[in-house]
Length: 74
Image (cartoon, rainbow, N blue to C red; front, top):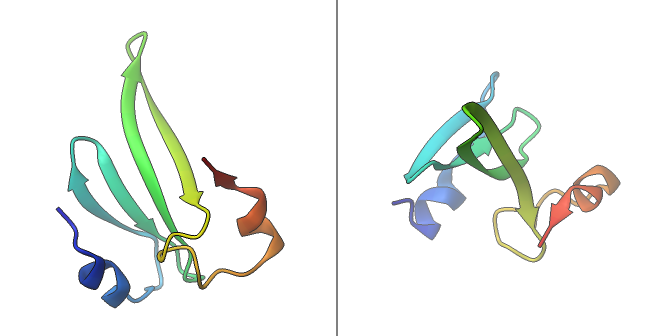
């Protein structure tokens, strides 16, 4: 399980990175510094991903652009 300290310490690299939190949930860190929670699940035999950035969550606080605001989910 990822702690708040670990998440805050993750720095963006040249390529997207995934950090597993268990049970299909992982943190996707993009090269632009965006941090998104993704959930991997299967439906009807096909793999799907739910993606979102929770408004006000510390991992999303530094994004501050219109695109990040548009992708916010609850």
